[in-house]
Image 1 (cartoon, helix red, strand yellow):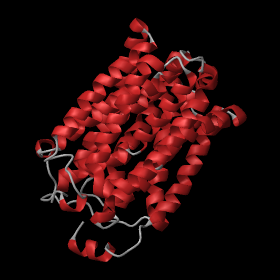
Image 2 (image 1 turned 180 degrees about the vertical axis):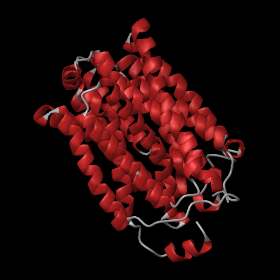
Image 3 (image 1 turned 120 degrees about the vertical axis):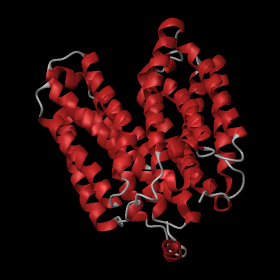
Image 4 (image 1 turned 135 degrees about the vertical axis):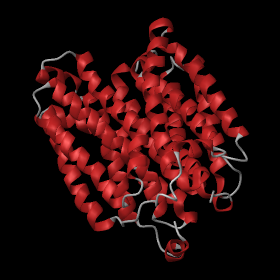
Length: 401
């Protein structure tokens, strides 16, 4: 953001409509990714494939995000920002529409991969776009609003998509996603401001950004924290089965999602002045919940309470971590945030792999110990990154230039 940008936005209210358009983009990213999981039986029957093959629709999406985020971010960073945003949204329109009408498994899988490509670019763009709309002292709050689509999608998107697929068919559910995307395109054109991309001499290389002091500790914290989260989130059904709650998995996830929304609201109040403390407190609290689950995972009340606290700590994670990363990376924020997309999608896959191995060999009761170890590592990394990465004090005094 230039000096003139800052002076123009210093006294301005938050551009809520524009930020909510970014939140809607994130909502579509998440629901598009997870929709096949909720519609597994219908898609399996409709395409005449096994449940395992249907599950690869989620894998293909994550793989597209993983592979595309960094190269596409670098390739498009000189382009105008709204053009890139609309390009990613158009990708969802095209590839969700293909998924809705395709009768070929391989065509569907290809469409899912490229929908993931669009998501990889979108995730690397949203945070920096939200920050660019406002004065530096408003960036944390702006990012909280722009990220609100994620917990809403996790809490409501998958159950709603599952209900929709059961009511009007799984193809129509993807058709509805395309219709929402069309509305979003109009919304972006009407409300989201445009900005120029970075000139070549302003663009930083991948290696330079990664070498920036503080970037690697933040990314390492992301991976430790989110791997612990994804082990539990991916296999939450077998975990809560220990307490006899398997039939209530929807209720458990709803509690998690609502608590995550509360976490976002809380983070919006803390991120500007207490980012470091909020990160450390979230990690420490999730650690305590994980340790408690070692002994209390068979008690329904303890599980419900633990899930609520877990959701509260997770809700603000995206805002806190992306704010810390972008502040640390300075002019290399877009590239750093694309690395964050890669890290995030890697641990989504890693949570499935690590959690699956633990489940098969030791049972769901082994999850909390592994989570506690990962969270302790994440806390130690974040705690030691007090000079670069997770600085003390107000953000306005420590933003990288």
